[in-house]
Length: 42
Image 1 (cartoon, rainbow, N blue to C red):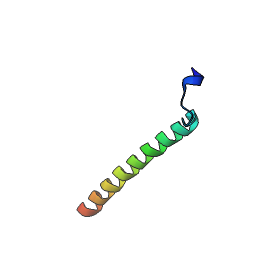
Image 2 (cartoon, helix red, strand yellow):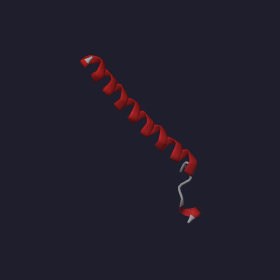
Image 3 (cartoon, rainbow, N blue to C red):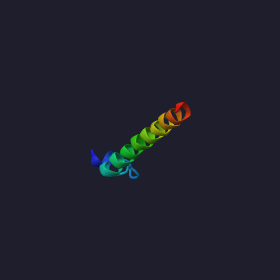
Image 4 (cartoon, rainbow, N blue to C red):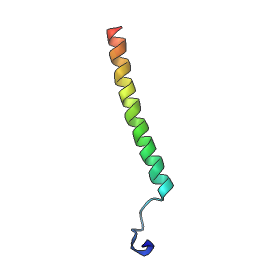
């Protein structure tokens, strides 16, 4: 199994970290939009 893996595949931890950061970025963007709406209404 291991020998068939591509060389440039990032390790599991790095992929998990990247996934977490991506989700965090999406959440931050949503929070910014919600904050702008609340400020706009308020």
